[in-house]
Image (cartoon, rainbow, N blue to C red; front, side):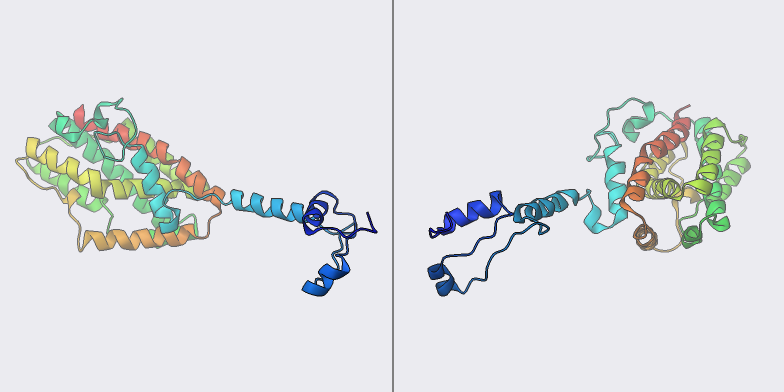
Length: 279
Protein backbone atom coordinates (compact mmCIF):
# COMPACT_ATOMS: atom_id res chain seq x y z
CA UNK A 1 0.00 0.00 0.00
CA UNK A 2 2.79 2.46 0.91
CA UNK A 3 4.51 2.09 -2.49
CA UNK A 4 1.38 2.98 -4.46
CA UNK A 5 -0.16 6.37 -5.09
CA UNK A 6 -3.30 6.69 -3.02
CA UNK A 7 -6.26 8.08 -5.00
CA UNK A 8 -8.15 10.94 -3.36
CA UNK A 9 -11.34 8.89 -3.02
CA UNK A 10 -9.44 6.18 -1.19
CA UNK A 11 -7.85 8.79 1.05
CA UNK A 12 -11.35 9.85 2.19
CA UNK A 13 -12.22 6.30 3.14
CA UNK A 14 -9.04 5.90 5.13
CA UNK A 15 -9.58 9.21 6.90
CA UNK A 16 -12.98 8.16 8.19
CA UNK A 17 -12.32 4.48 8.87
CA UNK A 18 -8.71 4.37 10.07
CA UNK A 19 -7.98 7.65 11.85
CA UNK A 20 -4.83 6.34 13.57
CA UNK A 21 -2.92 5.88 10.26
CA UNK A 22 -0.66 8.66 8.99
CA UNK A 23 -1.25 9.49 5.35
CA UNK A 24 0.88 11.57 3.01
CA UNK A 25 -0.53 12.49 -0.39
CA UNK A 26 1.42 11.37 -3.46
CA UNK A 27 4.16 13.71 -4.71
CA UNK A 28 2.04 14.67 -7.71
CA UNK A 29 -0.98 15.47 -5.57
CA UNK A 30 1.14 17.43 -3.11
CA UNK A 31 2.87 19.53 -5.76
CA UNK A 32 -0.35 20.50 -7.48
CA UNK A 33 -2.32 21.55 -4.40
CA UNK A 34 0.38 22.35 -1.79
CA UNK A 35 -1.54 20.22 0.70
CA UNK A 36 0.17 19.77 4.09
CA UNK A 37 0.73 16.31 5.46
CA UNK A 38 -2.38 14.85 7.07
CA UNK A 39 -1.67 13.30 10.45
CA UNK A 40 -4.20 11.42 12.60
CA UNK A 41 -2.09 9.93 15.38
CA UNK A 42 -3.37 8.77 18.74
CA UNK A 43 -4.79 11.64 20.82
CA UNK A 44 -6.14 13.61 17.86
CA UNK A 45 -9.93 13.68 17.63
CA UNK A 46 -11.18 11.83 14.52
CA UNK A 47 -12.96 13.92 11.94
CA UNK A 48 -16.07 11.77 12.20
CA UNK A 49 -16.31 12.42 15.97
CA UNK A 50 -16.30 16.18 15.32
CA UNK A 51 -19.19 15.84 12.86
CA UNK A 52 -21.22 13.78 15.32
CA UNK A 53 -20.60 16.26 18.12
CA UNK A 54 -21.78 19.20 15.99
CA UNK A 55 -24.88 17.33 14.91
CA UNK A 56 -25.73 16.42 18.51
CA UNK A 57 -25.34 20.01 19.64
CA UNK A 58 -27.59 21.19 16.82
CA UNK A 59 -30.32 18.72 17.76
CA UNK A 60 -30.07 19.70 21.43
CA UNK A 61 -31.14 23.29 20.62
CA UNK A 62 -34.90 22.95 20.80
CA UNK A 63 -37.12 25.89 19.99
CA UNK A 64 -40.28 26.45 22.02
CA UNK A 65 -43.45 27.95 20.55
CA UNK A 66 -43.29 31.72 20.94
CA UNK A 67 -39.72 31.68 22.27
CA UNK A 68 -38.40 34.09 19.65
CA UNK A 69 -40.88 36.77 20.80
CA UNK A 70 -40.14 36.49 24.51
CA UNK A 71 -41.29 34.34 27.40
CA UNK A 72 -44.70 35.99 27.70
CA UNK A 73 -45.53 34.66 24.25
CA UNK A 74 -44.58 31.17 25.44
CA UNK A 75 -46.99 31.54 28.37
CA UNK A 76 -49.72 32.83 26.07
CA UNK A 77 -49.28 29.90 23.70
CA UNK A 78 -49.61 27.33 26.50
CA UNK A 79 -52.60 29.17 28.00
CA UNK A 80 -54.47 29.32 24.69
CA UNK A 81 -54.08 25.59 24.17
CA UNK A 82 -55.86 25.04 27.52
CA UNK A 83 -58.93 26.94 26.32
CA UNK A 84 -61.81 25.09 24.72
CA UNK A 85 -62.83 25.79 21.15
CA UNK A 86 -65.92 27.49 22.56
CA UNK A 87 -63.67 29.92 24.41
CA UNK A 88 -61.00 30.64 21.80
CA UNK A 89 -60.18 29.71 18.22
CA UNK A 90 -56.76 28.46 19.35
CA UNK A 91 -58.29 26.28 22.05
CA UNK A 92 -57.68 22.53 22.05
CA UNK A 93 -59.36 21.38 25.26
CA UNK A 94 -62.70 19.55 25.31
CA UNK A 95 -65.57 21.13 27.22
CA UNK A 96 -65.89 19.35 30.56
CA UNK A 97 -67.10 22.07 32.95
CA UNK A 98 -70.01 24.47 32.52
CA UNK A 99 -67.74 27.54 32.69
CA UNK A 100 -65.75 26.17 29.74
CA UNK A 101 -68.67 26.75 27.39
CA UNK A 102 -68.96 29.95 25.38
CA UNK A 103 -70.12 32.77 27.65
CA UNK A 104 -73.13 33.33 25.36
CA UNK A 105 -74.43 29.97 26.62
CA UNK A 106 -74.16 30.91 30.30
CA UNK A 107 -77.09 31.39 32.67
CA UNK A 108 -75.59 33.55 35.47
CA UNK A 109 -77.27 34.49 38.76
CA UNK A 110 -76.85 37.59 40.90
CA UNK A 111 -76.01 35.53 43.99
CA UNK A 112 -73.43 33.55 42.03
CA UNK A 113 -71.95 36.70 40.52
CA UNK A 114 -71.55 38.27 43.96
CA UNK A 115 -69.70 35.17 45.16
CA UNK A 116 -67.43 35.43 42.13
CA UNK A 117 -66.69 39.11 42.78
CA UNK A 118 -65.96 38.52 46.48
CA UNK A 119 -63.59 35.60 45.81
CA UNK A 120 -61.92 37.51 42.97
CA UNK A 121 -61.31 40.47 45.29
CA UNK A 122 -59.59 38.16 47.77
CA UNK A 123 -57.33 36.71 45.08
CA UNK A 124 -56.36 40.11 43.65
CA UNK A 125 -55.72 41.50 47.13
CA UNK A 126 -53.46 38.50 47.77
CA UNK A 127 -51.50 39.11 44.57
CA UNK A 128 -51.07 42.78 45.39
CA UNK A 129 -49.87 41.98 48.91
CA UNK A 130 -47.39 39.39 47.62
CA UNK A 131 -45.64 41.85 45.30
CA UNK A 132 -45.60 44.50 48.00
CA UNK A 133 -43.90 42.19 50.50
CA UNK A 134 -41.62 40.76 47.76
CA UNK A 135 -40.29 37.50 49.14
CA UNK A 136 -38.15 37.53 45.97
CA UNK A 137 -36.65 40.87 44.86
CA UNK A 138 -38.00 40.78 41.31
CA UNK A 139 -41.59 40.69 42.59
CA UNK A 140 -41.15 44.41 43.25
CA UNK A 141 -41.12 44.97 39.47
CA UNK A 142 -44.85 44.26 39.49
CA UNK A 143 -45.98 46.81 42.06
CA UNK A 144 -48.40 49.51 40.94
CA UNK A 145 -48.72 48.27 37.38
CA UNK A 146 -52.17 49.79 36.88
CA UNK A 147 -53.67 46.30 36.48
CA UNK A 148 -54.54 45.97 40.19
CA UNK A 149 -58.20 45.13 40.76
CA UNK A 150 -58.95 44.83 44.48
CA UNK A 151 -59.80 48.53 44.96
CA UNK A 152 -62.12 48.48 41.95
CA UNK A 153 -63.85 45.38 43.24
CA UNK A 154 -64.32 47.00 46.64
CA UNK A 155 -66.21 49.85 44.91
CA UNK A 156 -68.37 47.40 42.98
CA UNK A 157 -69.29 45.44 46.10
CA UNK A 158 -70.19 48.67 47.86
CA UNK A 159 -72.50 49.54 44.97
CA UNK A 160 -74.27 46.18 45.28
CA UNK A 161 -74.60 46.72 49.02
CA UNK A 162 -76.22 50.11 48.44
CA UNK A 163 -78.69 48.39 46.12
CA UNK A 164 -79.76 46.16 48.98
CA UNK A 165 -77.80 43.02 48.19
CA UNK A 166 -76.12 41.03 50.94
CA UNK A 167 -72.41 40.66 50.32
CA UNK A 168 -71.25 37.11 51.10
CA UNK A 169 -68.04 36.07 52.81
CA UNK A 170 -65.26 34.60 50.65
CA UNK A 171 -66.00 30.98 49.76
CA UNK A 172 -63.85 27.89 49.46
CA UNK A 173 -62.56 28.46 45.89
CA UNK A 174 -61.25 31.95 46.70
CA UNK A 175 -59.85 31.02 50.11
CA UNK A 176 -58.09 27.97 48.73
CA UNK A 177 -56.56 29.83 45.80
CA UNK A 178 -55.40 32.77 47.94
CA UNK A 179 -53.67 30.41 50.37
CA UNK A 180 -52.07 28.48 47.53
CA UNK A 181 -50.70 31.69 45.98
CA UNK A 182 -49.31 32.86 49.31
CA UNK A 183 -47.48 29.59 49.93
CA UNK A 184 -46.27 29.30 46.35
CA UNK A 185 -44.89 32.83 46.22
CA UNK A 186 -42.58 32.13 49.16
CA UNK A 187 -40.89 29.06 47.74
CA UNK A 188 -41.47 28.84 43.96
CA UNK A 189 -41.21 32.20 42.17
CA UNK A 190 -41.38 30.79 38.64
CA UNK A 191 -44.64 28.97 39.37
CA UNK A 192 -46.04 32.08 41.07
CA UNK A 193 -45.31 34.23 38.02
CA UNK A 194 -47.37 31.80 35.93
CA UNK A 195 -50.41 32.54 38.09
CA UNK A 196 -49.67 36.26 38.16
CA UNK A 197 -49.60 36.38 34.37
CA UNK A 198 -52.67 34.25 33.77
CA UNK A 199 -54.86 35.99 36.36
CA UNK A 200 -54.16 39.53 35.18
CA UNK A 201 -53.97 38.93 31.45
CA UNK A 202 -56.99 36.62 31.31
CA UNK A 203 -59.13 39.25 33.01
CA UNK A 204 -58.25 41.87 30.40
CA UNK A 205 -59.31 39.52 27.59
CA UNK A 206 -61.92 36.83 28.29
CA UNK A 207 -62.71 38.42 31.63
CA UNK A 208 -63.98 41.59 30.00
CA UNK A 209 -66.17 39.57 27.65
CA UNK A 210 -67.67 37.73 30.61
CA UNK A 211 -68.32 41.01 32.43
CA UNK A 212 -70.09 42.45 29.41
CA UNK A 213 -72.37 39.43 28.96
CA UNK A 214 -73.22 39.22 32.66
CA UNK A 215 -74.01 42.95 32.72
CA UNK A 216 -76.38 42.48 29.77
CA UNK A 217 -78.27 39.68 31.50
CA UNK A 218 -78.25 40.84 35.13
CA UNK A 219 -77.28 44.50 35.51
CA UNK A 220 -79.06 46.36 32.74
CA UNK A 221 -75.71 46.80 30.97
CA UNK A 222 -74.04 48.55 33.91
CA UNK A 223 -70.26 48.42 33.54
CA UNK A 224 -68.58 47.61 36.84
CA UNK A 225 -65.32 49.20 38.01
CA UNK A 226 -63.79 45.73 37.81
CA UNK A 227 -63.71 46.15 34.05
CA UNK A 228 -62.32 49.69 33.93
CA UNK A 229 -58.66 50.75 33.98
CA UNK A 230 -57.03 54.14 34.42
CA UNK A 231 -55.05 54.98 31.33
CA UNK A 232 -54.43 53.03 28.14
CA UNK A 233 -54.95 49.34 28.92
CA UNK A 234 -52.90 48.17 25.96
CA UNK A 235 -49.94 50.23 27.18
CA UNK A 236 -50.34 48.96 30.75
CA UNK A 237 -50.28 45.39 29.46
CA UNK A 238 -47.24 46.04 27.28
CA UNK A 239 -45.31 47.48 30.20
CA UNK A 240 -46.04 44.42 32.33
CA UNK A 241 -45.29 42.15 29.37
CA UNK A 242 -41.88 43.78 28.96
CA UNK A 243 -41.12 43.38 32.66
CA UNK A 244 -42.10 39.71 32.62
CA UNK A 245 -39.89 39.08 29.60
CA UNK A 246 -36.96 40.84 31.27
CA UNK A 247 -37.34 38.86 34.50
CA UNK A 248 -37.54 35.57 32.58
CA UNK A 249 -34.30 36.35 30.73
CA UNK A 250 -32.48 35.45 33.94
CA UNK A 251 -34.16 32.03 34.18
CA UNK A 252 -32.77 28.75 32.92
CA UNK A 253 -34.70 26.77 30.35
CA UNK A 254 -35.69 24.35 33.12
CA UNK A 255 -37.10 27.20 35.22
CA UNK A 256 -39.07 28.50 32.25
CA UNK A 257 -40.51 25.07 31.59
CA UNK A 258 -41.44 24.75 35.25
CA UNK A 259 -43.35 28.02 34.99
CA UNK A 260 -45.20 26.82 31.88
CA UNK A 261 -46.12 23.54 33.58
CA UNK A 262 -47.97 25.48 36.29
CA UNK A 263 -50.48 26.84 33.73
CA UNK A 264 -52.91 23.97 34.15
CA UNK A 265 -53.13 24.56 37.91
CA UNK A 266 -53.75 28.24 37.27
CA UNK A 267 -56.67 27.36 35.02
CA UNK A 268 -58.03 24.90 37.57
CA UNK A 269 -58.11 27.40 40.44
CA UNK A 270 -59.45 30.25 38.30
CA UNK A 271 -62.06 27.98 36.76
CA UNK A 272 -63.44 27.07 40.18
CA UNK A 273 -63.92 30.74 41.00
CA UNK A 274 -65.42 31.47 37.59
CA UNK A 275 -67.91 28.63 38.08
CA UNK A 276 -69.40 30.54 41.00
CA UNK A 277 -71.12 32.88 38.54
CA UNK A 278 -73.33 29.99 37.46
CA UNK A 279 -74.13 28.75 40.97
